[in-house]
Image 1: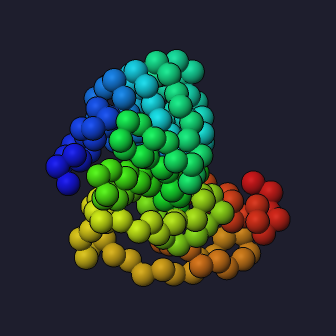
Image 2 (image 1 turned 90 degrees about the vertical axis):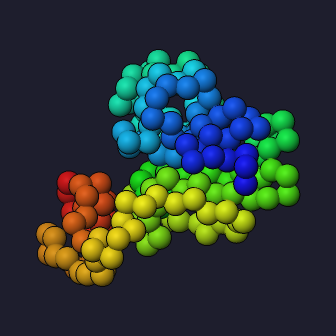
Image 3 (image 1 turned 30 degrees about the vertical axis):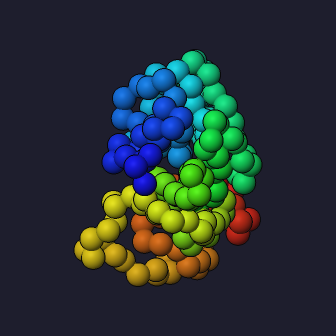
Length: 176
């Protein structure tokens, strides 16, 4: 697909996905600092990601924000964009682009097993799937295990983060 390049630049709409430097138009997949940065003129993201960016970088960290709910379609010229749950953190999204009869998905980070801190990953049919490679090496592959915390067992990935741990404890009616 010549309209989406290796920098995740979407040529037909002059927009980048998770750009590393400030740009005129950005689609942000989630609120972690390696994906969401301040200084863009216009940001399209889920409402939760926008909230995280404003909390992290300040209310005026972008010239303008445009929230897009999961599953909502936005037509920009001849290209349609929609965001779908990535399961990584609250508000994390996969970006589906439909253009010239083709469907491309860019994931950002994602997690396929559900937990109570993020919307559950949604498998999106597409012609091109662009994924993060952070955990692509076999050395990074760790089987799911059970861990014990405050007196209850729960299936979870290894090394749960603080948000996951807090949510699990709250779901078991423990104070956090």
